[in-house]
Amino acid sequence: MATDWLGSIVSINCGDSLGVYQGRVSAVDQISQTISLTRPFHNGVKCLVPEVTFRAGDITELKILEIPGPGENQHFGDLHQTELGPSGVGYQVGINQNGMGKLVKKPASSSSAPQNIPKRTDVKSQDVAVSPQQQQCSKSYVDRHTESLSQSKSFRRRHNSWSSSSRHPNQATPKKSGLKNGQMKNKDDECFGDDIEEIPDTDFDFEGNLALFDKAAVFEEIDTYERRSGTRSRGIPNERPARYRHDENILESEPIVYRRITVPHNVSKEFCTDSGLVVPSVSYELHKKLLSVAEKHGLTLERRLEMTGVCASQMALTLLGGPNRLNPKNVHQRPTVALLCGPHVKGAQGISCGRHLANHDVQVILFLPNFVKMLESITNELSLFSKTQGQQVSNLKDLPSSPVDLVINCLDCPENAFLRDQPWYKAAVAWANRNRAPVLSIDPPVHEGEQGIDAKWSLALGLPLPLGERAGRVYLCDIGLPQQVFQEVGISYHSPFGCKFVIPLHSA
Image 1: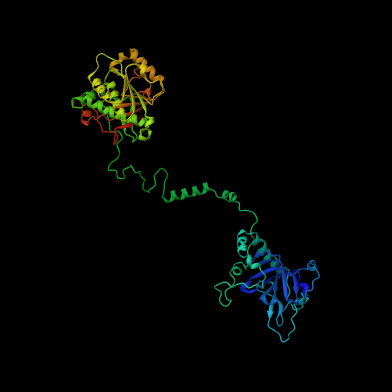
Image 2: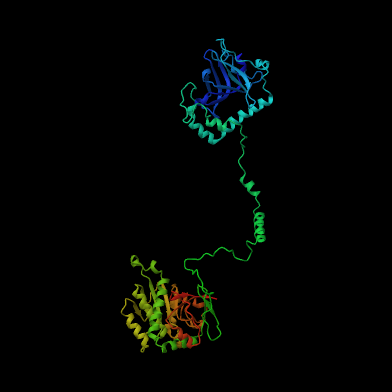
């Protein structure tokens, strides 16, 4: 009876056009010559419809994957079902190469009556039995082809594109291009027809597997191998070529000598440049002698004042913000500089600096006390400064009460120590300390006791003096002293400035 096959799990091959269907037999109808499968899978993907029905003429091959036990097919109900088989075509149960039961189409017999589908007892009588091992193999085959594949996201996406395949088998489906005489198997059946291993339900433990990798042991093994093979040894640089910056010279004709300046006396303090060159300090007496020899060779005081004013103004413009602050679009933000000068040569240097700052649209306020007789250098510098837009005051009350952008200190001079006792000097120092603007000192004295104002920056001329901490950060400017002038005073000199006229110095 056909009811004996209800509940069996079968695989129906409908050819290359319709593909392979798998499911549990729910109905067999003799009149319409159809067989229905519940919970069907098409080419390994679960169908959208709960049940599909096939005609006998569309079936190319039918395989029995699992035969139900006694009583397992009672829940399908008492349906009017008969044996399946088209006229002139018969089916028999056999064992395929995978060890699973199947119905194989037989050649047409002389009788026109439809052939019966053999019962389970008939199968036994024909010496074709399905062992429990085969049943278990068939069950695992179906489970792996249904549950695992249906849970996979990639197969779900493919199922969306194949949803049109779940239509009734009777509907015509165009064949795939490239199939010749039915010799080419269905790509999906060829790919997924074999048995696959079970897909694990748990996620891969990346942290646990990473913990199994002992990096320290592996690196130690690599170091040991490199030391034994001689490819690398600790403390010795690698043989690969060194990398140079855009401002570094690739070819070096000789080793770099960082100590290029030597002085004839013991050096109390040394500085170094950003390039590492050592710049020793000189005493005030040696520095005064150096300027005297330079003046004898034609580097007059006026030239030194002009060079000092240019270098000091260039440094001040950088401290004020440079091109970011001094821009034609920032006319409303003109910086203000208060220039404190005394009646001596150092004061003349400050006036020269103020003239250059005023020429660069900086608002300069020059303080200089009134004296009956001034030095010729100061008179000349004041005459030039008066031609600018700078403001000159002799009373401290005329200085701004609000903080300015920068204070330039040129009050102190070792040769005029008596000026520190003057009321105007004390008032100027008090104003500078009360004003919260940063201070730049030009050519400050050596002893800290002679400095009434604490500076943030100090600018030395030619060679630095042994300045203390109150001088702040020390900068060095080139005032144009020839090398032969240094040699006459016993100094072996090589310029540390490079392409600049003002360079920063660091305590060595």
